[in-house]
Image (tube, rainbow, N blue to C red):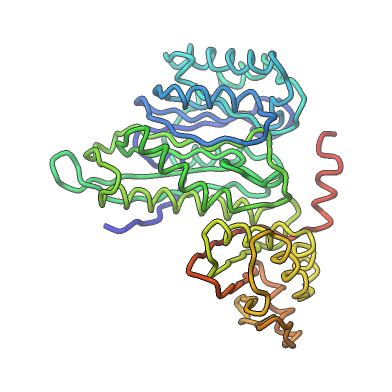
Length: 414
């Protein structure tokens, strides 16, 4: 069976439950806490922010992942990031994990923590405990609970982000068994990941050893979450966690096997889908920008060039203003770092309204301005840069830069 898309997110895999609650941590009149729970212990893999200033939950989760122990629950709050909070922030993580564990019959080391929101504020422990009690009582395995959890972790996001897929792998008796992967993420601003995402949680009932799962996650992140950017700011809280409880009862598989390749493909699809949805929902954004670089000498250089286009403030403003100024693209590629021959460069822009060739053989070409305007008026704009230097390629995703981005971040704290 090939991979198929299914509805829902983190509760689609066997044994996973979710819930949401209103705790009033920062927001009023909306849910601001979420919980994930597995009925069976999970192997876990994760990637985290490379920002030197790390939020307390990042340190808590990273230590648990590195220890290689089993986990069964995640408690997440939105509104306050628990970053820049010193010793007290770590104590809040430990107390939250211990409290949740006492309600769920677990040890505190079985509970992961996530926070997102304003940096520098202390989380009110009384509200966290009250919210956690609500979360435990509300845990359900239905699709609606998973969707509600994906909404509860939002901050400036305008839409929730979730997806799920199903594949078939050999079972312990040789017959094929269904294996499901579901995920949710949040992220709209302060997005410029480096071995991370904003907050991302992926659940699967696959039976897979932690070292192989970690190796897959680390590799997949490089071409998915690490290839998006909204504003060039890497958050203090960026976390991606993947939990696998093995309840599908597929036969264990080794790296390089056909089963491993199929699972990798499905996990990559989940991460890529969530990453693109985050890029398209950038704060104030009206358009998704996709930048693909082809025929480059090395993969790393292709990545650098592709990301330079989607991180350029001038390219982002150009797309927002619907001004087909090819000079912005030439400039962004030229200062990125990797060496290339401008006289061999070819740049085009594509959308549902067709394709326009911007530059070839070192020259900016004339083009149909009305057609360019039509393409730039679409929800997604694709730039293709052909370097004519080799066989490597890479794709990055970003969004346009609008007046609303400044409005949103001008008073984010207050």
